[in-house]
Image (cartoon, rainbow over all chains, first blue to last red; front, side, top):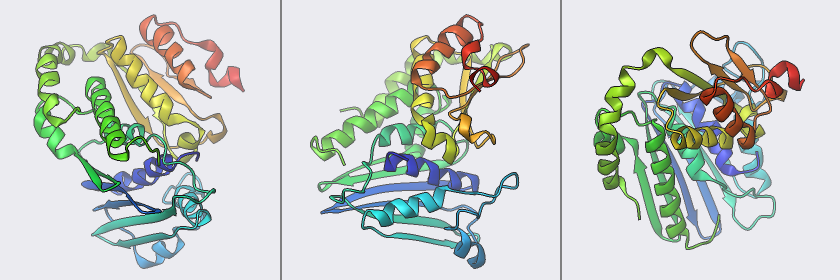
Length: 182
Length: 123
């Protein structure tokens, strides 16, 4: 993965697979620390599975025996002087949190987060996504509940809407970051 | 700066077109992008977003773009599948944004399969 936003797309997919009604993705810059968290209210994992989940040879798939998403995300956080944490409870949901030292040379760039969010919205189904981005003291939130309410009978994954949302996210993030790319 | 409020205008513009779309279910083309860990790391996200852009640019209201998981051919990712009515499923591999544009123009618009990008050909 060349960008952290690609990891976000990958990890969040687990939440949708876990039948989450709402997935919350938040990206928070504070000083030299970048915190990325993906929280869902899906089926959750029991303690035994949670212990094994950072092992690449753990997966819920039945066709193959490897699952690289979580291990890759953990690796990239730890190699850039950050931390990785995953908590889960059956019937409640799962939260994945990773922190990164922004000035660490081994930290990949955040990359195109608008592309990531739009790729997720394109495949939402009945789930909802809340995206929160905080940098340099400014905050931007996109809640698909709100968007769907505005849209009424128009599906949120129509290309017109996806391209509009991508532009909107990009504009807001660029303004928040004052031209600095994280 | 764009905000949620701007969606109203798009909605009003689209409302009339939606009725047309609903009546055209029979000629729907489904385009599926493999987006598991393998696909994403191989570059599926820009492919997905390019497809969305191109389909909008050419106003292909009968095309639905969606995502799927790992197809078991990780080394051929990014993989794009096209399901068109009365046609066998077509599987493209090693797709990049440039190839994605060609797939939209040649296959989705003109009905000509891009034979150079097929799984068998590329391998």
